Image (cartoon, rainbow, N blue to C red):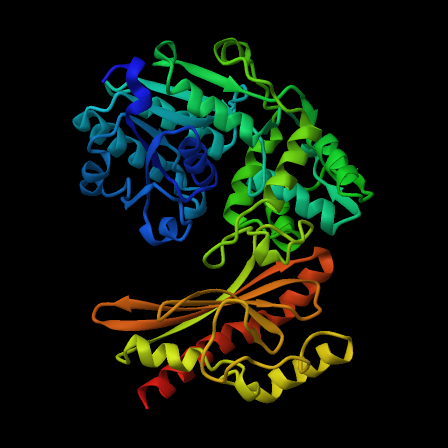
Length: 479
């Protein structure tokens, strides 16, 4: 297939469950593109409920899984990285890139589009070096690679953006490391998606490397001040020289909800000015770029327009009680238990949660928590269930509301108590080796520092209670 008729081809988004991938898939579909979305966990993709999208699973670290998903593909967007895997993520990234490059060669695809990172002079960051080397590995094969390099992305769910939003929401007074004066050209998520989709369609972009950037070059302190102004908050930033990147990552773990491995990898790259020369890309695709204020406004608007999910989804505005100021990423606690009981019996037990104030374990403590909520005007004790044994979307279960339900598979409850943040409790029945696992997972999106202070004392309790809940559900089902 030639570049000229690429619009009728099949686009593979490899890494579709990640931040860019989960936004690129619907963006391409809206442009009339046929899309195959791929991640290691197909169920996660199916939960997105993308209409007209083929969902599949593959792992770039397992070469045998790649050929089936690459069959018939015209252009492949390579968006995977292993930042969350720990200290060895750089080596894993290179191994994955080699496997994908070789599989793409065998499949005969026309083009690989790779999203890399802006590279400063003499980068010390393992994260940035890994992004650079991944592009080099992909280019060692015969399939033409178009690499788009971007720095900070402004959009809901972008790790760098969410770090800054958490800091602005949580800390009116910030004692910060010197990296807050590093400069970067932030780019709006819609602009980056337009660039990624556009370069895949142009023959002259094959084999090229492009810097992508927004129209502003700002320090991270400037970005946080402008973000605070748009969110109606006042902040004071006091930089000090003693906060190393390692200490900064521990600090961010306490005051933000961004996963710690990702936060540390990002901080390693913030020690440098990360600048761009985007003249070539702007000449190739002369789109109208959003400035920082417009980018932030678009991010907040995107959250408000987010469709209701079929279950808890990271950052879903519905699962944050429609409060953009609540943290995008959630603190989590979970437990599970394995059983031979069939899904119908397990589901019947799960659907009785909260009936007569029965939450399976430690009911007196659940009652006391409800009483405290009632005393401060919350919904606890003020509402009745529609039916003792059945649930449907919209039903109330004391202070909870059913926001999603898949019979015999998954139940999602939104906590409507008065508390500094938004809570979701999700039960899932998962088939496993001829048996079933019952999972119970709590997600909490803190509202500023008070939300974090609410969450941390509960961590030891949560580590125990959700295991105990699933054991009791299994016990009752097996009876």
